Length: 272
Ligand SMILES: Nc1nc2c(ncn2[C@@H]2O[C@H](COP(=O)(O)OP(=O)(O)O)[C@@H](O)[C@H]2O)c(=O)[nH]1
Ligand SMILES: [Mg+2]
Image (cartoon, rainbow, N blue to C red; front, side, top):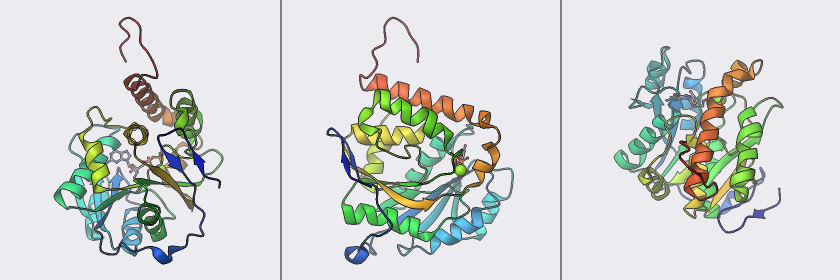
């Protein structure tokens, strides 16, 4: 894929599978992988085991949403550090991710922290290797996974996130997967984002991280990870209405960010 350099905020090069890893080091860095989870008992053991075999030897943290199934027990047995998200807010992915970051970068002094979705059925440890290598090798501030998706997968990305970015943040429309759950950055960048007020607690968090990162002047890069199979797709592929809460939260996050950064000017007493 060709490199596209946007105005002055972020540039992105979609990577191929053919990285030359010969110059990659970083074995001395402390890497922490964070899985937000809500009822993921069918996949949690496998994703933890797979993540643990990354060449960066990551610690694994699971931030659970008070799952009603055996996710937390299975995660502990598989060797992960398990914490519960602080607020009983659902959807609470943002709440969980921020708690995972505080644990990883503040309590455990991670040099690099990355997120992976826990419902991935074809996760490979290479995903972690590639995301971490992108930071080290290409000297970017944030690496983000993108994938080949099924035609009906990623509906909110295709119909909400990308079109709305095109309208309000056109410098970010070259991101293939602006809602990617596979995101990796160094401690300093995560600390900076944790300090920004007004971050969403629900599904808006992924697009919020993307927009804030760019607006703060950080340098992001998408890394191709192959195909992504995940169990949540099985839930919504026959009934896309199940994604309406996610769609609404992504929309409101982009609108609030557009107001914050002067891309929308409100008149009168419009409350958003
Ligand atoms: N802790 C926590 N994790 C969540 C919550 N909602 C979703 N997740 C996890 O976030 C990841 C992505 O969610 P998923 O439903 O697969 O999203 P999709 O792939 O965009 O449909 C999965 O690991 C979920 O278990 C939540 O409210 N709290
Ligand atoms: Mg999923």
